[in-house]
Image (cartoon, rainbow, N blue to C red; front, side, top):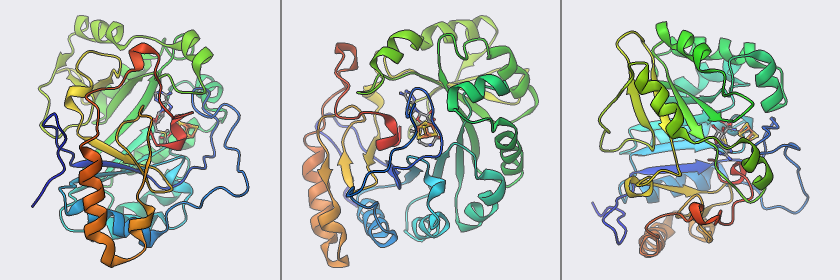
Length: 327
Ligand code: SAM
Ligand code: SF4
């Protein structure tokens, strides 16, 4: 099977697909004023378009799919989307990134449909801080949903927390308590600068290296990176059931391990989270007979993928906030 490869020898078994732009939260670093619906915006990909997209990608080596958004669980047909991904041969991991607000009510259906991995965003374990960061006082129900999901045999349940100076940088002791007995992994993500959050970034950005030093001093040890792993540097500790991952997009070599592509909710291929171009794939998703043209478009575009992002130079690309592309 031909696989997608770029000029730098990187291959791309991992696709992050945004299935919706809308979100029900107002995370201060992402959509501080909430999602604003505007008339005339293109509709998200249909289930049929998504199935064609996934069959095309599977033909060139897709093994790991992440459904994201916006808030992907706001799509009523999410179980059907998961089931159609599970029906495509070769995809052995189907993950969902969610804010967890519908977890307690719907996770069983997603699991039955074929979801294998779950990531839930939890920026703080303290109720008031969580409320201040996300605009919603819903931490307790989200934590209940996570407990429910932990008993459902997922390959992994991971929690995402964006590191925010002055807003949640006192939460490490609470996380350590949480991880002592629970076999979940929490990923601390360094805040990324996007088109819309420049002033916020200046106020709240915190380097992930400082956290890594703290972890190492407390006896946490860096694990070797699995070949098709995501972007996190993962730590374990003999005294804890859980693990800690650190995602540091500003670190040296972050891009060298890039193995992922993104497609927006309207079907634009993005070669990089911080790139300046979106390549519309939707024209090749209207008919099953267009699959070879879709694959040819993917292969041609991969030839254009740059070696790395230019965030260090303040170049955030065309993404106003990560809700438009899925983080
Ligand atoms: N709504 C879902 C959620 O929050 O999990 C999925 C979409 S959200 C854009 C995906 C992830 O991106 C979340 O974990 C969120 O915290 C993270 N994120 C959003 N904006 C970010 C930023 N500027 N820097 C770092 N992470 C960000
Ligand atoms: Fe919504 Fe996720 Fe952005 Fe928060 S991070 S506003 S939950 S899309």
